[in-house]
Amino acid sequence: MKYIDLKSDACTGCSACANKCPSKAILISQDQCGFYVPQIDFEKCTDCGLCGKTCPVGHKKEFECSDFKIKAYAAYAKDEVIRRESSSGGVFSELAHHVLDKNGIVYGAAFDENFKVVHIGIRRKEELVRLRGSKYVQSFISETLYAEIKEALECETQVLFSGTPCQIAGLRSYLQKDYPNLLSVDLICHGVPSPKFFADYLICLENKYGKIKQYFFRDKNKSWKIFNSKVITERKNIIKYMGQDFYLYLYLNHLQPLLRKSCYQCEFASKGPISDITIGDFWGYQASKTLPDDDRGLNCVLCSTSRGEAFFEAVKKKFNCEIHGLEEIEKGNPVLLHPVKYSPRDRDEFWDVFFKKGIGGIRKIYYSPSLKYRLILFLKFNCSWFYNLLRRVYRLVK
Image 1 (spheres, rainbow, N blue to C red):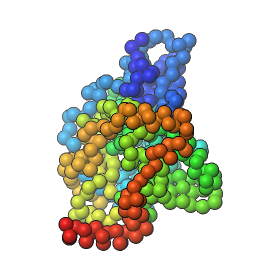
Image 2 (image 1 turned 90 degrees about the vertical axis):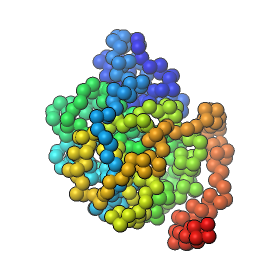
Image 3 (image 1 turned 45 degrees about the vertical axis):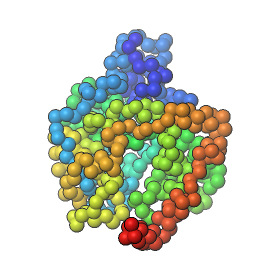
Image 4 (image 1 turned 180 degrees about the vertical axis):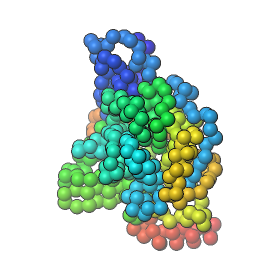
């Protein structure tokens, strides 16, 4: 059977093979590190080869959107409530509203009741809060989700599917044809951390603060530019800036040991778009009179197909936006050009410590932000006016 080796470092866990299998012989399970992998029941397998034909790995050229010159924008939602409740500028929410207004379905990542991140579909605006906000962990796509999407598309229902680039590739590979009523929206992806590691981290938080009721990877009340997590428990609300949050520190500042192995050689997140629209944070944005830098969230938007551009134009009146150069966005988001870099040996050592000593051992060895780093983040988080004053003085002196 021509099928990607289950132990292959290239497998992204997109679930396309499991969704395509006519014998339901493939289930999505978790490996030792907690990442989602296909598992074959060889008693059910008929050796039809559909799984191998459906796997998108190694076939990116088939999904690249090469017939359209990418148009890039800086944008944020005019609706301040939407913008405030979004991790960035609220562009995704307004795109979703446009689909829901047409009685369509929006698919994206959401927390379930156990804080596992899973892909779900919604039909009502009231449910959009579940899809809104960053989730820095790999989401689970069930063995039937793509089939559900195909059924909706065949019924001519407008569908917006959002996810990582490899998940977009998985869906498109499963569908095997283009649907005019499908809008694919991928996120600028920095790699997907382990669901198991995140689950263990939440257990540590509950042991310290009590039962978790809500968790936010990014809270913007202090600043959009500083990554702050927010945990709401039965006893109290906790906001931690990046230097205090062990999970965010590892994900954003270390050698990226939390990521799936395929992320370090990802063919989908760089070198050619595969979705209609790509959205992310506009890091390195140079403020203009049209869009002042007010630190409340700003998206970069890349329209890679005529369909994506037409859709964005239809929703454009809900945004404050301006055209920008693609190179400017790539400069602040280098993962658009190449995958996340890492040291294989360092990653292996990290997971070896985790398997032997658990998350407590990881914290002792890998959580060591410098005093300077902690001081800078503390000033940003608690005394932003003083921090900005120091920056201006430093620039003048320099």
